[in-house]
Image: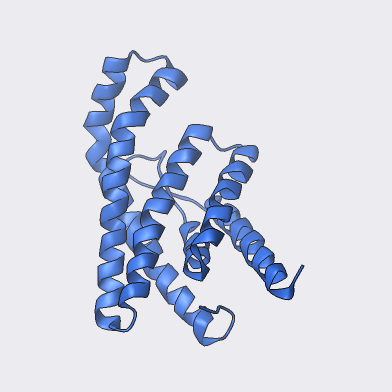
Length: 184
């Protein structure tokens, strides 16, 4: 195995492990306390910044390790979709607009937040009622009605997590580039 390959394995395993660890440092969202803020998206975004394939290797490991450590399998799948829907537009746009720094940060952060809110709104309306039926024995109509009653609060949650995670990911990646730890 070449030295570059060893470095890649080290980056993926270390940053994925960091993402799993950060997932356990949670702050409850005050309006729906089962939703939690965490910073696990930052190391995942750094991996995406290093290369899309690294994110593709990391997300399944992030999911599997978290579920093995006790996370709900449906909730964790939703978390992975939420992080991916934030990270992909963030990193893609930031790379494309990096030369115009004044535009790069707000546009990539705004696109990441919008993407997360829209994708998770759809996933919550489509998947959460079935999860409620499976987990709590609700009938489907009651579960769907309940999801409709809280989905806007969930949208606010997704907006308020996407922006700080996106900004942190950009500034951490920039710092790691400046110090030579991260290479493009």
